[in-house]
Length: 154
Length: 302
Image 1 (cartoon, chains in turn orange, purple):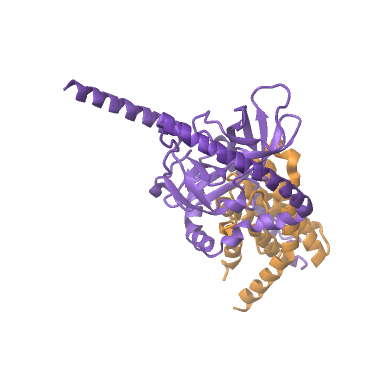
Image 2 (tube, chains in turn purple, blue):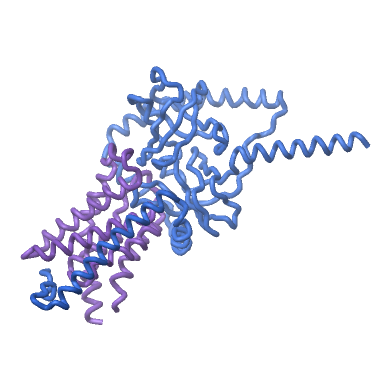
């Protein structure tokens, strides 16, 4: 039962195996969404260093240069951890906002990592993917919540 | 949900240390990630093995799914089509009208070409296909444009070979596994394709823009010679792609050249052909010819 959260994140990372051939990035980074959902639903479950191994798994499937997600996901988890120490209250909207900011950060940095000066000029390509990812987050959070309930009751 | 209380360690030194250690590990993870990233820039093929394991693992599922639903292949295209449906419709009508005329011209050219070929006794020069297969998935969540082909080194696919669809050039083989290969598509920002204008052979480079278009830069610097509707085909220089494979059609001019739409786009590249590397094929052909010549010479001598 302890392995369920990491497995769900890995399965989310493998979503790129769906037979979707696109001309530009459109598929939300589902692995990251699942990680964020676990992180925000259950603070304190992930150790701060969890972004590194999970990011490495994501790098195997995403097509980004290797180390890209390992780095960005680590940064996200450390930042969220720091935020948790300072924030007094947490609610649903705040979670969504944090998740959205993390998604935007990871997608934009991911694109800049691929080609720094070249991609700086056409970051607008990411807009549909960012919007889709932010809208998908609540659904992923629901799903992760359901899995979490089942995990605890089982 | 509010953070649990054990996050605030109070005066327990032990708890404070363990939190500090986990932070340190988290930051260490980020640093090591950055190092890995650096390594993969210095040696892009360094982690190919890991990626290949990943693709090989998921390939059976991708293959089954891609056989089940061909329609999902254009999902991204369909979604994005909503953003500019009206202008696209008008543009397509104009394009259709133009292509009708072009088809008639092409037919005439084809007939003439056949007649001339017969005259010269030329056989079809298109090199043989090494393999024919399906693109089973792509990096649709990343800004890199790499597709996975459901065939690999066991089918004779090697790194560097050009990949094309009936509509035009798709890309080249980047990494191979036993039953899968990763294809760097023409639209990837790291892919530069030597092209020429079909009408007059004006040489240019096509660099991917990551959104189904390429940036065209003419080799001769001077006034911008491109106009909307110019067809760009591979020039054969560089020795990777054979000449004459359609690549893109110019959409609009820009300051330095033009932006062109890739012909083999995501909606029509489900089936692709892997071809031998053009120059290698030429070299092999020349060697074969020399061998034949020496053979005939010795035969003639006897």
